[in-house]
Length: 72
Image 1: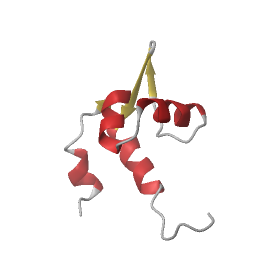
Image 2: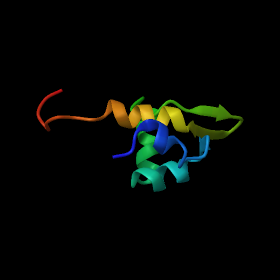
Image 3: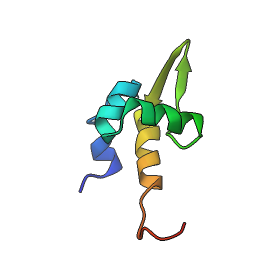
Image 4: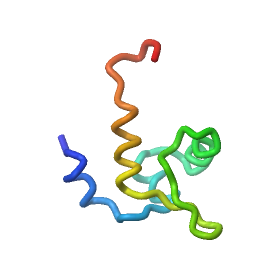
């Protein structure tokens, strides 16, 4: 299993929404809705463009690890 440090080397430092969608296997629309709802990784707004820092993506993934599918 990869550690955050090992996985971080595989990602560019800033990801586009498309790159994040490809990496997570989610659609861009799903990620956009999650961003609006505050359920996506932290993001950077560069003018009109949204970018995701690799470190924030990996922290978001880690924060979503569950031990069961039951309640929160």
